[in-house]
Image 1 (tube, rainbow, N blue to C red):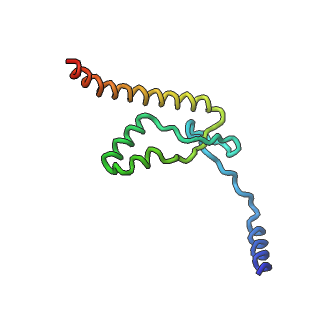
Image 2: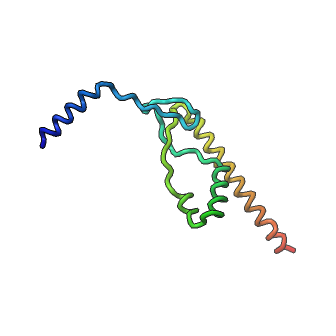
Length: 119
């Protein structure tokens, strides 16, 4: 049986003489092609708009899946090494947008309650 496997492997390797093409990746931020050696793998950027839209549609369609959708680990995507600073700045900007939005929402809820309580 070992001879059959060795012969099959020898015939398969001799028929495939062409070298495999290197896998080309695309930077998730810039869209340009990068090689696997220069790829920086990180979770994708989730914008504040995407997050709010996902929450709204999930609450309407399947509220039981909201926790799974929000807290599930996202697969890493490739980024070019030279855009790490740009990626960090964009993540910080999206976090700031979300923080300001949540503070505004809290203010819209708290101000009428405080006004009624102090009346």
